Length: 496
Image 1: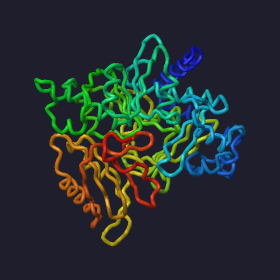
Image 2 (image 1 turned 60 degrees about the vertical axis):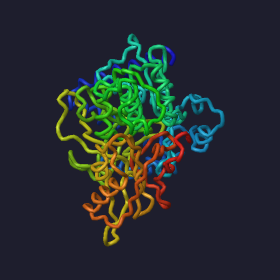
Image 3 (image 1 turned 120 degrees about the vertical axis):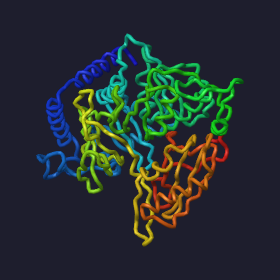
Image 4 (image 1 turned 135 degrees about the vertical axis):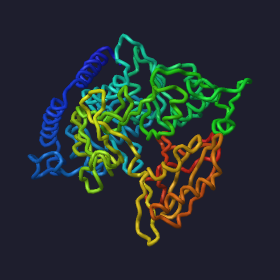
């Protein structure tokens, strides 16, 4: 990162820091003005939005029709506001063999892509001004966690996610890498032993990663007895947990003591959070971001839910009919209006995430509302049948209620048909027999009226990962369902 870009980024970081001291009315006034500016720009420069909101240009935001990723990608050339940006050319740019990882489209656009798990590959270009807001939004997570962003404080960062040049975490990591923010980027899909060796040598101040990657690393460190709350190793240096040895053969000993650990891109379950804190202490912070938006929400120093970044993104938690749900209730989707997006405007854009808003404001005094919990994406909902053959959508919380807290290194539930589920378990000490776990799941589904579902459970050396290196907890892999993106678990843990 050059000096000019660093200075511009720091100005944005200071701007966001000052907004944490706003009153709620000041924040809402900022939102209203920013929404008006975003819509005026879209109606002036985006043919798609002029038509999509036809007859409603003067109506309130909540009365506008939502827009999906599929709609945006289908009508990409009409949606973008720069006529030089064309979908075919952007797709060719990202697919170009040998393309430099930090190459910019047309020399000025950062392009991030979604993993395409819903069957639609999303391409999202950001100009320099937009990209600086994305970078500043992620710096805010560090700020809210009590780690002040400053060029005078050198911070060694390690990111364990995807190293794909299209994945936002990888592009953000490359963008912020500098003399004051040296960054180690690791692929979450590479062997755990390689990750352990690299991290032990790097000794990061901040560790950022997928929840599943952080869980594997925490287990590797707990074997060494290095965690602040972990179980000690035996006298001869071997782990006292034979299941952990099975889960992570020949991992070596992880020895890191980060000041902050940030979980990103995957649901951080209470079970995994407890594990991470038993190893590294109460320094674990959950973040919620998206390829299309940058950071959406993050924990403050109180670590009680996450604050929405409402000065950058306007979130709406809605039901299946896109109607608002009450605070404390689970929504079916999140609609987001990104207040800094100009190249590809996002107005009431549908994110298929199931989240729940907090009822009470945070005691920290920040003006931003809180997100109490993230249950998962729309694709995480099991699509089953009840005794009469009627469709039953089972939310992820029903599965988590059974499997969270069970002593396993990792688990993954795969739906292969409307009447068949497969549970993959990476065992650790005390893991119940697979058949016992299958019976627990069967009983839980019967409570929801679902019967005659065949559940098979298998012990595996590792769970499957998506192309971006994520390890989703629930996967719909039915033939007629494009949501299933993860491949079956490999029989050989060395396969990638």
